[in-house]
Image 1 (cartoon, rainbow, N blue to C red):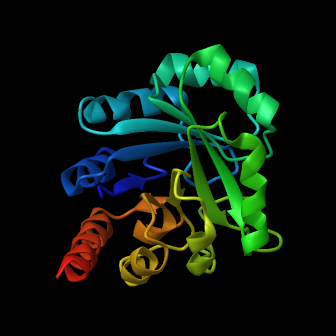
Image 2 (cartoon, rainbow, N blue to C red; image 1 turned 90 degrees about the vertical axis):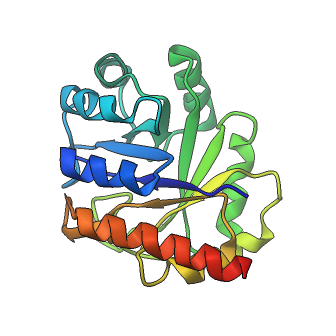
Length: 219
């Protein structure tokens, strides 16, 4: 099974180049002002040009207004929208209809019961992103470097397409792939030298760890 890999929160040419060189299937840009990974729509539009024909560019928003989404879509021309806030199923459907773009709905999970929250979105969102619940006091819905018990994902219906996120890094990606066997993975803070600062060397190291883990499983 092919594994989709999304490097999220990109802000520099060097990080973008490392993500593409490693074989990222998706590259993500954060449009949430409180995040250290925030990037202006015009700059994201410039950076995403390198991904054309190589990886899907994802615009990550948190309860964004139509006006802000209009600006992002016009400036960046994303291949997909990731909704990382408290968007309802009807809001997701509305956004899909407005832009004609596939949507990935992010949901925070900590226990198996949290997976029930996907049901109203099935048939609306093309894909889900499962992230750990933010620590108390955090203003960020994601990118907190926190993991959850990946084993709970074993109970998902086989037809649910998702990306696993939250606290992934080169040291634990082997365990994540073994325990959850996800169709896709998403990493942000796990390849940073400081909050919001992507490290090309850590990105390269992460891709090496993914390849090693998959080779071990195939052996």
